[in-house]
Amino acid sequence: MTSAATEQTSLLAPLKNRTFRSIFLASQLSSLGWLMQTVALSWLMATVSTSDVMVALVQASSTLPAFFLAVFVGAIADNYSRRMVMIVGRSLMIAAAGMLTILMAFGFTDPWLILAFSFLDGCGIALSDPAWRASLGDILERRHLPAAVTLLNVGFNTVRSVGPALGGIIVAAFGPLVTFALTTLGFIAPITALWRNNWKVQTSSLPREALMTAIYDGLRFTAISSEIKSTIVRGTLFGFAATSTLALLPLVARDVVKGGPIGYGIMMGGFGAGALFAGLMNPKLRRVLTQEWLVMLACLACAICQISLAFTSSLVVATISLAVGGAGWVTAWSGLGVNVQLASPRWIVGRTISIYSAFTYGGIAAGSWFWGIIVQDYSLPLALGWSGLATILVAVLGLKLPISNRSESELEPSGGFSAPEVALDLKPRSGPILVTTEYMMPEENVDQFLDVMRERRTVQSRVGARQWTLTRDVQEPSRWLETFRTPTWTDYHRLHHRLTAADKELDHLVLSLNKDSDPPRTSILVERPTGGVRKSYPPVPYVSQK
Image (cartoon, rainbow, N blue to C red; front, top):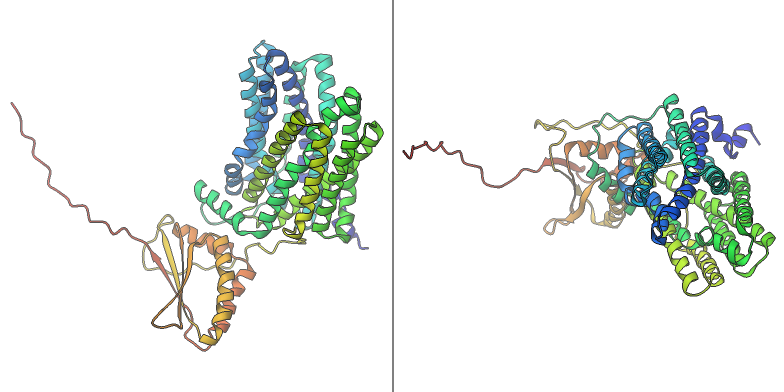
């Protein structure tokens, strides 16, 4: 095997990049601090409030922003400097943690104040995380993206194995105030790494998209991409089914294994060890298995873990089962995350990652609530057993909604667009723009023509065309008219800048079908209002009433 091939299949290959290494290691320290802070906040809330709901809301307040703000922050990550978006998000986290520390030092421990700063901290995470994941393709070579996504998942799950335990020890020994102070210091590391490192990104000569247009384009692209839709469905269902392992693990430790806090820590350690081992093996497995097989096997590993926990009371067996579950957990999320990255061109990757994250976070949250209700109304073994069967169904769903095995993206813009000359003085915001293309198609080529135009509709709609239609002249059947709209003149330019080389091949296919007839004729029109012209009336003279 060549050294290049070895580097491509190595989990640690992305760490050779100085910028990625610096931000990644700083982010692990920040994640450790965030997990410690979550433990401290939950403990503090339990001591200042008698409401179980308020305690439960601590976790929800820090994770809900990632669900509700996902589409907006994705559009921001694609339209502004991702590095600056990350800096703003991290600054928000530092501000929230710092203010919480100061207020705690002065004795302010109001429950709603705790939730407010926990929510603000969650907003910072929601803002910075999509921009960080979208930046991977800017910082690293594309062949290192699978390893980078796997490394992020391995890093977080490894930290999650020790973060809560470390947070509990610090809270018990020194109190929540010290924990908040250490968390604030930990949050400084990523922002320092971001200030010290910069990276080149592809820039566009076009003005920035309007926020609502960017959101619309992101939702439309996601809805059109069958690969991303399959990944979102599988990820949401996997999160719903497989989250029972982590959500119910404290109950397993307390009621089944009866290992107490130490037993819980040992089992979390087993989960983290399995995650780490799977991460190290993932590049090698990727060489011999398709992405779909990896995800299916990962689902089965998680199911084995869940069903084993439902039938064992042994700490040793539970820990081994959790190692298998941790390996499946990391492998599944890595495979799904890689698929979203590789199925998205750079101009929209922040939005697709955010939409994917919103659905998967929602699936995890809904699953945690649902399996908790099953435990409350029935039993813990039943909840774990049924969730294991549900995870198996997610694996079987791969037969209907398979995950692709892309090695590199085919969706990058090809460039080379020359703006057409126009006789009107169009401004960037002029519009809406109506584009029509007339084809004269021989009857014998109509079936092939329709096949090409179906694909063309998907291509044009994916990059921004709206209200795309294909019509046929009832009086002259060989005459066909393709029409679509863009909101503005700038959006028309942006559409053509997003087309790939494969997309432009469709033009050649249409020309080959049209070679014996008149060539296609394209017209570009700008819509104008047809309401009545406002009349100009002379001013009414002022008449004194005195």
